[in-house]
Length: 220
Image (cartoon, rainbow, N blue to C red; front, side, top):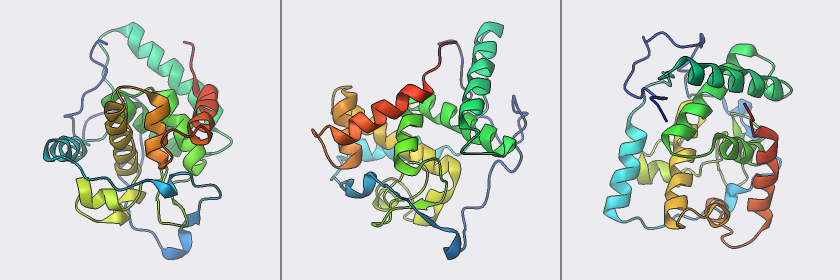
């Protein structure tokens, strides 16, 4: 992969595609919270973490720079633009606003690549978890696009669960957590997804994510 990401760039950098209101406020009115119709992550388990793992996860969360794609060649840049256009068309029925849709897709792309995950897998997980609703809340309090449980803000953040409604924060937590589970399971996606859902070894949740993933595969 030839220079796809530039994690150190700040918000003042010129993005590839304009992203209006990139860093939105995480505060929301109670009435705006949406209860997820089918939250799968409600059984996600809080696990004791070794100090080395906690440090690695905390370090991964710390950098809050917005996603600014950079490319080593015109070919890779054009491939990214084709992906972005294709995904934007597929997501239109769920996110009508162009700027919101592009903000979301660029952030998913950045955070999935940053965590070493397949972007299609992350999109499939988001579809299953929240149906792409930013303020989705499960019956047990899992929040946002990737239905991150609030206890993770104590484990690898500052303990403020309201930040899980911030788009980039939620996607970063979710991707880092899934990466952690993949590492624990030796790269086995089926088992890692089971951990993410709190149903390790059981097929319904991983199969649902794999099924949703097919919609987001890109042949470019």
